[in-house]
Image (cartoon, rainbow, N blue to C red; front, side, top):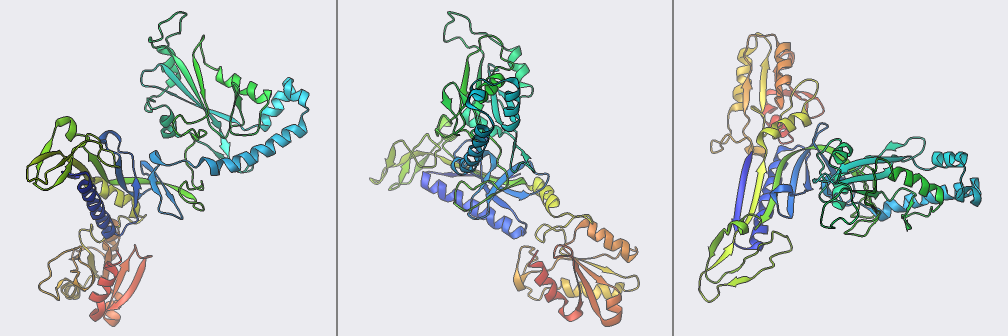
Length: 489
């Protein structure tokens, strides 16, 4: 990990530093010429309220990154905003159709006093209800989520998944790492006894109902038009499952902070963007290769880490690391005296070793590795046919020589100033073996001194990353042509 820590004496300067480093990271990843994502991220245990992650898309990535196809919204799945109203419109429409179907199929008497046959038929028509369970860190609260198990077109339904991050936003002390939560809750069960001191902790249940379910509970109507005794009975059966004794139970339909109906499912590709009107979200797996954190005074305030500020400077001492700005006293030294300010911190890092693995995951194919120019051990490998080794040396000298002696060998140079870093494979092996080995190692460009050289004095230039390019190039044009390819890699 390549780490960087920054310290400033004002909130504003610390933010300027943060954005400067973030822009430098962006330039670094731009230079690699590999598609990447910059996502708003959760600061987690590091603290602070502002952070960004740099990701390489990869099938085996450990993070889900959500992006919009219309606006610049890119965010880690942990922080994705959930578009309730847009999603609710389509859900309500489908539920209105469902209600109409129920009303047409069953009489009011059947709905109010359902027989076993009627109940079974309604259950067949209603969405299949899925359940998800979690537990709080103290093991006393069982958290259950009820949601539609499938969504989409009835002929091609997709299975829904509950978002642990969405549940945790409703129940902050949820322990997301626990397995077998129901068993843990039962093992730690503490019954509520009559006359018990209200301060004594006891076991309880929280039922979270996703807004997509056509259900009614305890007199509180979920955000849909269906309201009948059958659905109440179906839900009450589910809610009473695995609930020993008189356990205090809370049924939650709306978010305690936003007041919006609960949207507890994982975001899927094709869901509406919460930021713009017309955008659709895309979800892709990715590998995190860099992270920037604005820490503010998260660590400096508890440690009382301060710095003397120059005379005539307006500084701010804040115990908060919030982005909107400081909340405590200002120290104005315009009178020439020296004051002190709490340090404003930033923390940054690029995972060098994991970046290599992420590049391999992003660019490797069935032939081997495929390094970008700025990472590759050599830009070009020259492979001669047996008997053409002296000619290959001429090609090597042509590419390796520097037309401008003032240039240093810098793989990050661009344009005409780029110095080609070439390697001559003079091993006594068949050319086919050398070509396969070059593909396996992942050189950006392969120059073959073979049949085309014998016939017309041309070299075959190969580049797998540029759509498997193969081109015969005259000796005098070789260097310029290869530079033009390297500038694309």
